[in-house]
Image 1 (tube, one colour):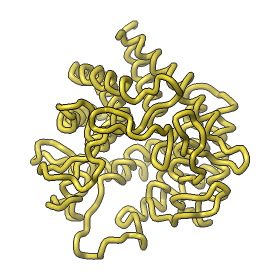
Image 2: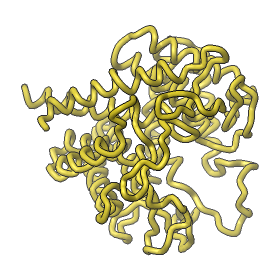
Image 3: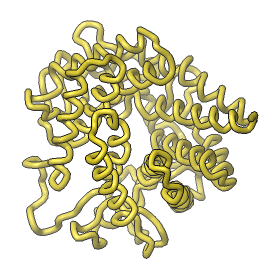
Length: 393
């Protein structure tokens, strides 16, 4: 397919299919916030509200308002979700719960650091859209809490026994690479640089392991050494590949082409490593020594893994003109659009079995909301827009 047609395909899918679905089906007009547990047609099958999905949707509609078009319906959607989060999402001290009842009563305590990261993203982007200083303050204060919790993200809810096997996880430094740029407008330059430098060090010098052939591991010992345990052997190809487009964005922002080159190299390595050569698609979890993973869903094919891979590949091509990135992009594009897009109803499937068949016919749930599909469509559309612009100059 021509690159100009791909640009239009991703743009149209975002604006004419996926965003209208969430705008029409997910807003809770009675209590505020969003329903995310939506079946194939978009009907609600559970009314619990999960903080990180609430935050992601506030971010999504704010981001579109800020970067695509000043549509009032998008801003209204973002503000009502933001107000629900502000009122019910935390304990009064910006410790963000994991989940709430439909009307905002807490169900699960603030054990999950990603409730905090997506609240920060939400209010950072919403403050841009509205100019509301209260939203900016919530984002900045929550970000400070995240940084204070870096060494012990779960706090008193950490179930591991202290001192026996202390591991640190790739998840937090990886997301901070993206989060720092998301709220750059709220941070002091010196503080921003320090945070970015620390995250880059963790991702590219601690979790990236040249001695394992150049793959990224999910967990290491706190001293940076490898752990020969279930957690220490865990590989999540999609997670590593998603992090690489965050690094590419940082490379552009910092004018450091060597970061971009390294991120492209790791993307291609992790993709080759994680590709299911028998059935196609990218494995969810793997064990770096080839042992059976502890996650029973290890061989599922997930929506976000493939969509994030599309972003990294097309950015890699845009920034370095890597033909290998473009070749892989077409391969992942074909798999993703063939297997994850529902041709009868809006939005995309989330969960496939190893053979690429739909496992759950939901469009949203406890983990899938208004985020990876629309963000991916937006990012790929914009990358193609830049590529096509340059080719016509």
